[in-house]
Amino acid sequence: MIYTLEDDSSIREMVVYTLNSMGLAAKGFSSPQEFWQAFSEAPPSLLLLDIMLPFEDGISILKKIRNDPQYKKLPIIMLTARGSEYDKVVGFDLGADDYVVKPFGVMELVARIKALLRRTAGDKPAKAALTAGNLSVSEDHHAVTVDGVPVKLTLKEFDILLLLMKNPESVFSRDQLLSRVWGYAFNGENRTVDVHIRTLRQKLGTAKDHIRTIRGVGYKFVKEL
View 1 (cartoon, rainbow, N blue to C red):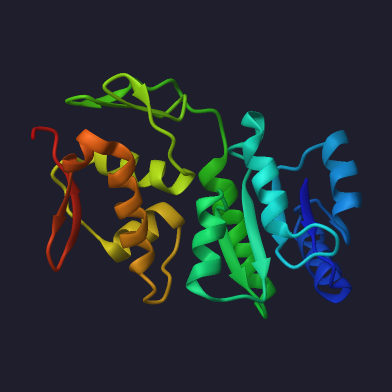
View 2: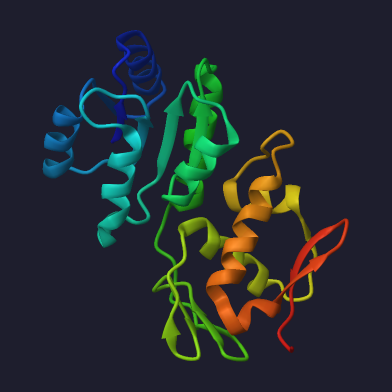
């Protein structure tokens, strides 16, 4: 079941009708109160979440959901009239999987939903922790340690680190990282990657030099310092 939390009735009804007509079961909610009641009874398989809502904004709702360990991987797409890079970075840092700016084409939205469901479907087999020097990353437990001390990363910082570690010595351009980590290109707003790399390095401390900048190209991970 796909939930749509959107206070604009025309958008909400259009989205829910289209999803249901295409075989994707969906329900719409106009207020956070209605949404939280339904969420407590039966969480969705994917959430379409507007930012500008009455009584409680979408960012606050996103944060509450991601703070609950059992919903850290719930697919969430933000729906908003805002289009600045800052708003996108805030949403992605808190764990949004995708970001659709209004006005949007409903078929594009459906394509985004299907793509996200494909990426998140199915149980994944247990994976051994990735290590490099004093750095250890567990994909299954979504955990990072440096010298045995836990490091708290945002979802996107973790995804960037995991991608780089899985492909040591491979150089990724900013556009490639946007595509692989966020799922689609940002139409040139690739400074988002630089912001995430900078904060990731700061949090890794003594292990930060495993992530190297390749001037004019992008970034890569090296196992040996």
